[in-house]
Length: 640
Ligand SMILES: [Zn+2]
Ligand SMILES: [Zn+2]
Image (cartoon, rainbow, N blue to C red; front, side):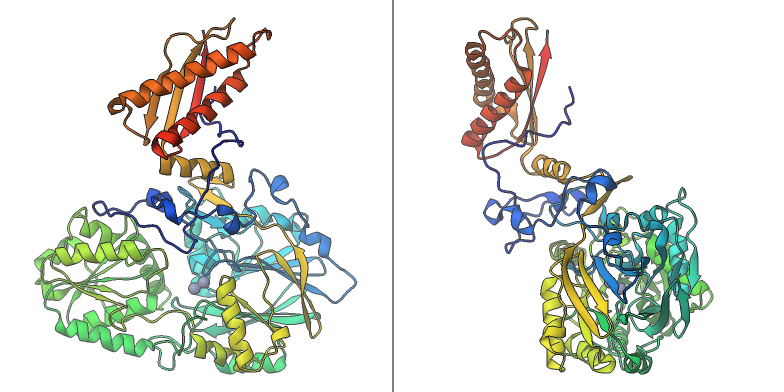
């Protein structure tokens, strides 16, 4: 008997699965200060539950490609004798900043643009991340001529290690910084073939199969971000990737609007542009302002300064290193990713670090507090991050002392609000002075806001506009902005979901009704795609309601109950304190047997499946009546 067998699909009473994507986020009492993976799946507020269906997005059982690709394939769309290019969003159109991936097909040849990961939703307990579903490329794997990478954020390159081997390891084109980071990422997947990265710089043009590809410099929160143009006789697309405008950047060049304008003048059939900030009015804050505000904090602080930020914000790291030099502070860098990224950026001369500036954490104790800056991960209160370890006193040599200053130089990623609030509370209790980007302009988003978006549209003047890098809401708002700058409504293309195919012909973009299958491919530990809906549902029940195992001995010949059933439960109620519930549970099981016995008088073999289903159903109803909970129930029948 396999206790992992999922519960019967006909399980009464009816279950309403909710989702945090619903309008009411659940209230969770904070118990101590810990943030762990299981928090993501825990939902206490029954009132907030909504039927899951309305949010469900073609998540099926995912075992193999064969099962996954139940729908049209990209190869079915190939028209070798027509001037037509197909563009299919394999990710990035239902999520903001997640699993970005565009497939571009022309005469049977394919290019991918980006291959990123998405972080799991609240209702995917235990899942590490989600990668784009490339099963619809089946039959064209050998025709994938390359993957073009706009920049090295994980929502753009994080899935490469999973996707490249399945496509025969095609070349990956990216900027020097991006390719270096991709090679670094490869170290985590030693069994994969080494990625065949090709350096591709702003201003370069290369031919990749039938595609003419050109790159343009854009400013973002990671160095060396590119906008990418793909030209075929059927039309030209421009993918902005992620970008921002900043009239006065620090240690980086502005987004190259001049080149973008030239590209536009040459003709862009469809512009694909970042919708992340489409709901934010005005223009982005300049890095110069951020620098000035950070300097104010440095000037005022007498204790140590802890600056927490996203490890890919190398530009901000450079600013902080510069401030440390100006204010004669030595720098401790804590957190694996921030150290690695700083090292790569230093090697590639994207940042410069004066000799002797960076010191090990242990050495910082010998210095007066006013001589120390700690750069650390943990601005999103991520579990295991450096700041979390410091706050929880788990760090071997650093902890917060009264008079220290903690800077959160980053935005709050939706979903992390509560954890960040808790973190700030803990820091305050330990005596730290706290500066957050919500209180002061000490962070500039890497993404454009409404006025910036309009400027991009006015610069490129595309024939058609496809807002991307956003859920439908953000894309729709971005489409409205396009109309404000004169793009006709019918020329704004809004796919309903990932997978919907765009057809591009000379001076024409059509949103077809063909939707290629795009499922959630969940990566969980070492497994890829072996976590499907049933596994997730089971995890959720276990997390929310607990489990009850009924061990039942049954006579081999007669099918009669032998002795007393054993009841084991975890996370449901503490059975030892619930004598009556325990006795009633056993009585319920006996009743199942006596009823079955009567019905089954003539049958020679007792029906094990039937008994298990009855035990599950009857106990399910009984527990719900008594406790308003629906634990997972596993009857184990042992024939004796
Ligand atoms: Zn992104
Ligand atoms: Zn980015």
